[in-house]
Image 1 (cartoon, rainbow, N blue to C red):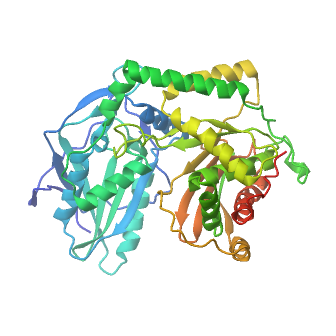
Image 2: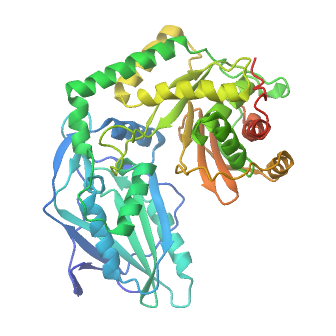
Image 3: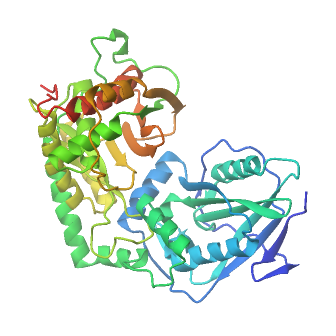
Length: 493
C-alpha cells in the first residue's frame, strides 16, 4: 500500500502538500447512506484546479429549498451516482480533465452553503478553487471491482459538510498501475435526475458550447422578482383550494381482512421499504397510454391513485407527483436541482380505468402548472390548514417517475395471457426498515432489466405493512386488466 500523497493535476510528477479544508463556523454535517466499512486511505489525491468563472452568493432557489429541507429531515446528503468500469487505456490525466470539466461547466458542482448570513442558508458559487480526485490502488492479486465497491460504499457513508465540502466526490481505482474503475457521487442538492442526464450527455460529448439556461444564481434572482412572486402567489392559491377540499383520512383504519392491523402500530422501525419488479407493468401501461393518448407517467400515476383508493377506501385521492419543471423557459437543460412536489386531487368514483387516466391527466396538469413555488410558504400554508381542519389531512402520497421519457415503439400489445403470465413472475421483496423520517407513502418508478421497478416506502403507523405488497400487485394488475379492455372498471366506489 502506498502512503497517501497529493499531486496537482497539471504536475503529476511532483508531490505537494494539500492543506485540509477547515470546517465553516456554522457548517451542517449530513450523514451519508450507510453502511460503509473501513477503507484504507487513498494512495494519491490529485488536486484539480478551476479558475476565472462566474461566482456569487444568493438565497437558495425553490428547488434547492425543497431538497435541503428533505435532506435535513431525512438526515442524509442523498448521494447520486455510482461506479463505472473504465475503457482500457484511460489515464489519470483523462479523469482529472473530466472532473475539471464538471466543476468548470456546471456552477452547481462548485456550490457550497453559507450559514453566516442570517437564519437561512445561502448558496455560494465559487469562481476558483481546487477539488480533489482520489486514487485507490486495488491489491495486485485482488478484484478491482471489489475495491471500487468498497470505495463507493465508503464515500456514500461518509458525512458531507454542506459549508466546507464540494458537492461532487470522484475517486479512481487502479489495478497494477492502470485505472480500471471510476466512482462518482454527487450531492442531490447539486442536481436532479433530469439534470444528471444532461450532465452525462455533455460530459460524453465534451460540449464546449456555453451552458444554456438560467443557472441557480439567476433562478434565485428571478424567484425574488415581481414575476417570481406572482408565480408563487398563484401556486399558493391553487394549493390552498386543494388542501381545503381534500378528504380527511382515518388515522390508521383497520382492514376487514386483517383485524390485527387496527390502530396499534407495530413495534420496531416506523418506515418500511419494499420493491416490486413488475414484469407486465411496462407493456400494459404503454398499451393504455397509446389508447388514451396519455403519457406512460400519467397512466402510472392514475393506476397508483386507483390502487390507493381501493386500499384505503378514501376518495378523492390527493397525490404529490414530482414535477421536473424542465418545461419552463430557460430551464430545460440546466444541471441543478429543479424538481418539486406538486399537488393534485382525483375523484375516481365509478370510473373505468380509461376515465381514471383522463381525470388524472387533467388533475396532473394543474399540479405541473403550479409545481414551481416557495416550499417554505407551502409548509406554512399546510400547517395552518391542518390546524383549522383538524387531524386527518394527509397529503403525504408521493409519486416519482424517474424513468427517462422514451418514444412509443409502436409494437403490438402483448396478448392478455402473456401479460397475465408475466405478472405471475413479478417479484416482491422487503428492502429496509428504518426510523429515518420519510413521507407517509412514497412510490418511485424506475427502469429495470426485469421490467419496471416499483420502490415503495410506507409509514406503518398510518399504512399497515401487510397492505404494501397487495397495493403494488394491485397497481400492476390494474394495468394488465386495462391493457386490452377500455371498459375495465376502476373498482372505486
